[in-house]
Structure formats: C-alpha cells, structure tokens
Image: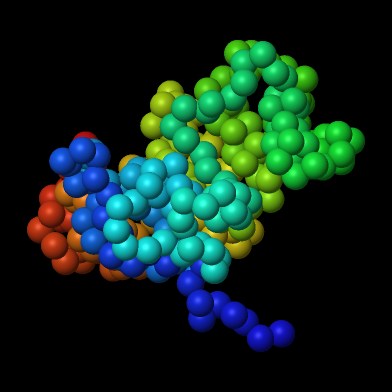
Length: 250
C-alpha cells in the first residue's frame, strides 16, 4: 500500500485572527502530518487556544487558509460538518451534560450526528470507557466523578465520534495535581496508538515523552518549531529560553 502521508492532514497557511482590534494570530503557518503528535506551548495569551479552535472552526479566521484532510474550512455547512466529523476536541472544562449518565453523554453524539443505533452506540461507548479505564463509571452522573474521571469521560466522548485528529486545549489545567497524571496517561496511550494529536499544554514532562513536534507561540506567532530533544536542550529564541526557564524551574 502506498503511503499518502506526503500531504499534511492539517495545513495552515498565513492564518490571521482578530478579536476586535486585537490580533490573536499573526500569519501563522503550520503543517501536521498523519500520526504527528504536536504540543503547542507558550505564555498565556500567546494564541495557542485560538490556533486549535480555528482548526475545528470554533473560531473563524480572517485571512489565510486552513485545510483539514483535504477539506478547506469555510462558512459552508458542508465543510463544517466534514471537519467536525474528522476532528475531536477536548477542552479545559469537561462540558458534560450533568443530567445524563456517563453512558448517555457518550452515546448522544453517535446517535444524533451519525445515526448510530442505540445498542451499537452503547457498545462503542463501553469500548472507549474501557480505553480510558473507567468502564465501571458508565451508569454514574458526572457530579459523582472526580475531575480526572470527568476529563477521561470527555476524551472517551470525543473518541466515540471516531475522529482522525484529536485537539486538546489545556486538558489538565482545571484539574487537581493528583488527577493530572491519570489524564496524561490516557493521552499518552492515544498517542502511542498513532492518533494525530495537537495538544496545548504546560505539562512539559508529557511533551517530552509524547510529542514529536514542539511548537512555541508568543504574541500570536509561532516563534519556534522543533523536535522535543532540540526544543528542550537548545531552544533558539530568547523568548523560548525565557519561557522554558520559567516553566521548568517553578
């Protein structure tokens, strides 16, 4: 079988994004290949979250182009539906429906968006709850779970839509320290399975272990991009050096 990996699965070219007069992204270009594990880091307000929110059209970019698996992002309903089918997203907040059980939270998407049968959707949900290691929580409500468990449910819920690409927007920043690792473990396992991932995170131990590409952003620009071994040992820009100094030694 001929590999088609020559074509990036995500291609951003000259992307700019404004919020009023504030420019959140300045002419950003980034290629992500199938199976890449990209970690995006940078100081607060550097445009990291905006970058990944543009990839699944939660934010609309003003200029430049974003192509995800051959689909160009535009205002059309078709392009939006196509993108949302390919791209899963996990947020800081778990965004689970409090009045639904864990299982119901997971089956909702496949049943509504993909017309999956209820039985099949439940089987799918259980498979992904096993994968994030909490199948025994299926009948509970979100409020009965710890933050770490809720975030793992949120990851399983995204996986139930069987996306090709997973975006993580600081998935551990709302968690208590002792719960962070259980979520990172699940993410590391996903990465090992070959899932294409872009993670915005400050967890540098995780980045070292899992990423094959580090992206450092500041003031809406990609300042530096390199493999983790180079990124952590010999960052080129002063801004990146300062950032790593702060984050690795606090």
